[in-house]
Length: 134
Image (cartoon, rainbow, N blue to C red; front, top):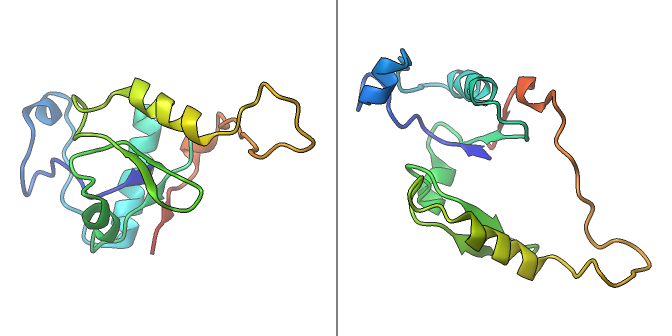
């Protein structure tokens, strides 16, 4: 997961759902502020896999047109293999699954050494601070 700029800060475009949920965030102005908000987001949403944080200039968000949110699959060569429509309504996890199946090696045939090592997320991952991309 890449944490990008805040979608509904109170100093820009506050969302009614955030008001109901009592979520009041300003636009972050420093990398530390963004990392703090990202870490809180991971914990509050129960996200159990590592995250990185876009820089304060929003370089990753602009390069990938990631706002409001999108799903991407990046292949081993660093190319975009799949890009969803804006979420959450543009998310089609079955398309992500098909892309991953196409990219991952066939695990039904015996192999001398695994080509991909799968890592199970730790239950404590969400409590770790998010990492900056810059």
